[in-house]
Length: 461
Image (cartoon, rainbow, N blue to C red; front, side):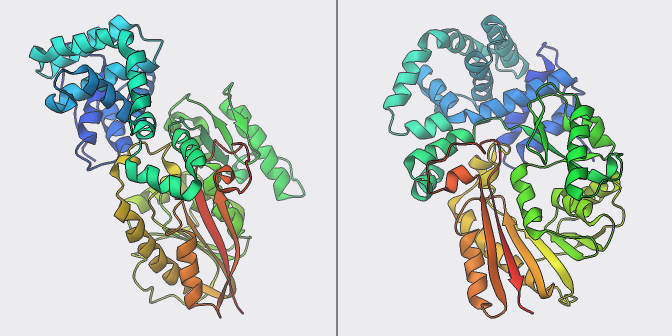
């Protein structure tokens, strides 16, 4: 893959801030996801581990606070934010984020770095404005925050979510719970790793649950992070090494997976000896979870329509020692002519709006449109129809998403069942996080999980 080369600078700007600035510039084009852009620039710039962490913190921090930062810029610019060049707006966003949220960086260093950035991008004549805004900000912050409190779009500005998404959340969850969800989306998530149970040497034990418990303990020991903790199925911690540098990842002993994403395979409950299909499988976390449960006994087919993403699945399978798993590239919205109703269990993880993953995919809220919900719901129903043709009589199917909309979740399943009521039954549904959907005033004990939906369907004999 040809990666972009960041140009060498005659004017000294620290590498992490330069990469963050270039990433925000490319984000405006909307052609790639922010994590891809940042990864490419970090690689081409050969950033150190510390600089990678800082560039990530800067980019994700700016996007989690985008509307608030823009409000500040607009109020402190004599002619408003619309009068400023886009590159200067991005430089100010980075500077204001550091001043407001990163206490460890001295204010004078932030201002000086921002001024040098203006020179580096040939915006020297405007650096006086940038210098003035950043120097005035600490003294004006309280007044600016008071202005936000009085603004009709207060919640949108404070949480940096589009108006349509706030209206949707208020309608579905109620105002108080919706606002809790909006603020939850701006909380940096913990990284969760799930162990490949068979890769951790251990004495023979009578049950899989005991083997899994041992694998978790050994994964905790292998990571050695002081802040690591476990929920019994995964090990999580804040910050630390980039995922690719973790020894347990490189050796195939573990893989990244949020607890909410594990619900679908747990509901499917594949057992050794069964024939299982994982549809829309990339990047492969659920395929790895199923493969670990099958213990190389039975058949597992991992299917995705994107050849490049399927290659990533194959690489993950090989890294974890699951070369026996078959991978197939196929457009699953079209009829699968070879489908012969032979699978014991099928999982279809449908493409969706991803509203349950806004903590991790910080740019997604700005890319989505209201019309995406209906379009993806239609696609999900098509996938569910085609997936059902793979399941044998008496078999089972799980439909899952990482979103929260009724249209893409419950209503899709209901529409399918209304057409196939004699052949299929709904066994169980799970929605995460529970605190968001519960009828009671639960605490946010699951606040560290993403949002997801999964439904288990059984086929009549």
